[in-house]
Image 1 (cartoon, rainbow, N blue to C red):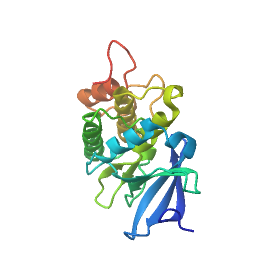
Image 2 (cartoon, one colour):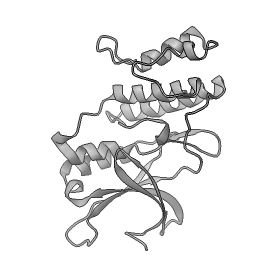
Image 3 (cartoon, one colour):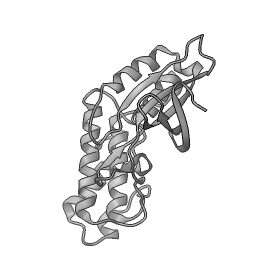
Image 4 (spheres, rainbow, N blue to C red):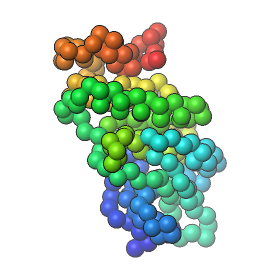
Length: 219
């Protein structure tokens, strides 16, 4: 059944507790990802403002927000919709280390995507392997950039603040998983202790990305 011009195909993993569906855009005949927000939260001025800001960010490794549908009194559906481009490919899996050159390329591409967000004073807030899709070219695409941001705007003072440091730590966790084949613990073991061939510079970089020391924040 079509909703606001989008035909659902399958549910997708939630991002930061927000439900998402793979849909067909009935007008453009392309697949998109649609996140749903309760109407009571989505009609807040902060939600609409943040939605417009995130739509302006474009990067090849960042899934673009291509539309936002905010309900009004005439709309029977009480959900707001945030429509994002869909990247065809598998989610990034952490469970086995991959060749170092590939891991570094993925990490560099994701870092570049975060620079685009942070340059507009925006943050992602939920960077992790489950938010990354590898497209047909093997390029990482960071999904759900608007989801935690708009959820925070909807919750207002109830939401914990989102920071660029959180994004950098998420990037560090992704890179740790790619080079070590496992998620970092708390505190994380040095990557070189799990994979002795890791160069000291990479070992230090990953640990600095994961830093929670207020005197030595992530770079």
